[in-house]
Amino acid sequence: VAAEPELSRRGAWCARCRYSAAEQRRVAAYAARRGVRVVMELEVPGHVYAWRFARPALVVNETLCSPPVEPDPGQIGSVNMALLDVTQPALLPLLKAIAAEWREHFGPLLHIGGDEVHVDCWPRVPAIAAYMRAHALRDGNALLGHFERRLDEHVVRATDSTSVVWQEVFARAPHAVAADTIVEAWDGDTPVARDVLASGRRLVVADGFYLDRQTPVDGVTSWFWLDTWAQMYTVNVSAAARTAAERALVLGGEACMWSEQVDGASLFARMWPRALAAAERLWRDP
Image (tube, rainbow, N blue to C red):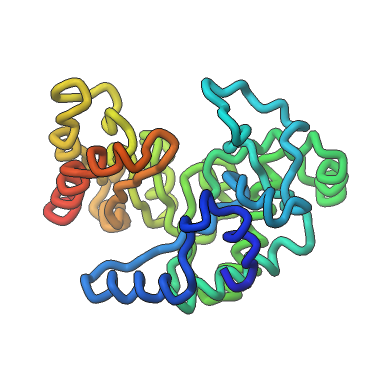
């Protein structure tokens, strides 16, 4: 990222685990020739462990947040507890610079994350608590909504982009989600998806298509976890739609591959043939 080279230099998992600007453009062009649009995710304000190495002043000290004990914390700490200090004046200009760079490479769609944000952490930080009192923000959800509105104004609109957010943003701060924002549902919470569609916002469904999970469709499998590709044909991404108008707001789905439990030895076994099943399901009858 030219706007913040330290973010990839210090925050990358390894020296080879990053894309140069030229490589980003090649990926976008390769995908476009095949009818695929690459959408970058600028995951904020949670899941920002890499920011601790590049911009530690922008990250909350998670020891103030009493992180839960993880089954195997390993050597990298509590990754999911890493949280941006959204009150820092330097944050939005930096996010805008990153978004503008990606806008040039990948086009107007920008995923701005918002999932699994430990909002209860913010009020435990004295400086953030003072900011919340000054802005009459009663709790962490209110601060999240405050941040999302400013993010939309100063980053998304300022770069002429259209945002995608995870469903938690809509569930926790629905009034902060712009009317043209696309909401992505991932955890099977049908009431949230129904509320998204009822509000007139567009929906993308990832629930049931998580390629990293041994059983992507909760509680359903064909042969232990080896034949779960078959279950992906049962996923109905329009299940939350109650009218034809709402069904038209369902854009489709996404088959996600996260890396907590996947490495080079298991990547292809998890992806194939399940990604093919998800693709056929979504292309033929979303």
